[in-house]
Image (cartoon, rainbow, N blue to C red; front, side, top):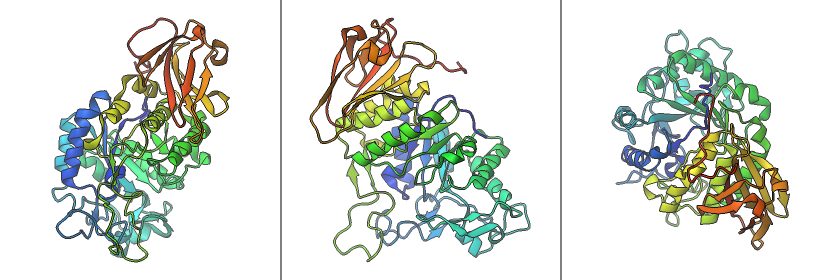
Length: 455
């Protein structure tokens, strides 16, 4: 069952920067950067994404995967068909990395694919504690369209729950605190199997559900057994992703509640696709995926400064889990500030999903009220038209439904905008935002501190 987390989880995920190819040296470098740059702001989950069990063919003399295949053609498994850390990328296993994570006061997470490895099925490996094999529980007709590692599990078969129990028990024995389960949002029986398996370990483990596509609102009752669920397709450093996030936010906003956090996916700041340098002409085999695991090739985040502010304001006002995915050692000073800004964090950790208050032309005003302080909260004034000139709007008490004595503070510019009764004039560039904290007149230079039932 869900841990009933009172605030959206905060962490880092390796996918945007390393795809399926995070290796031991880079993992330790990212962990130390995470501890120094983001942990002081409250980030705590360090998550290794897909492929950590993959045995890859590497380019000679490098740690780069061969461009012949998007995913590994072999997986490192134990005698019971459970994944183990790759010998090519994690030759010392996870014990040193997890130990260091916990020494830093942080928590460790791993990605898994739904189901049972095809290799375990082909070899009829036994399911721990049972008389059945992986071949007996596999549903070979249930496959992931974008990753060949696993078959789904037929949860009506003897030994099906035992496999999930044994897998999660193994991860728990390593000290895993967070599981991102992928290709699973369309399979309620396997979600319930995962939640049962986590409960049986007795270890508090966050369960994050993912799919690679949109979640199904009809599945909400079973999703709520987890802690967070991806509600968008993959989000990257482009305007299409910003617009996709707006649409998902508007649709899913009524479903956010303490303990269950719809997730707008990772934050692609810093250097991306570090293990996917653009190949030389003729290097790629015909018909293969040219970008390996992820989108595109090695690059720095392509969002403009204004677009990065819009990106983070969306996630603050929606109360989405915050998981940067880029190379943390290459974050710019501005990106670090956006990720760790205390006023942004207060809005996000307030745990209230905002909604559209009113619109004028291409300008939209979204608001998230403070959970316990009437007359206080946060506003996002967005210009959603990327092609036109800057747009302006005058904020007034009647439009916002707030007192004229309400004080306004521009978060990203760190500027006092005065009283709402002064009808401040806000001008917003295309694809930009004015992110505002409003208070009930008892002005303070400190941020609004969210209060929760657990306080």
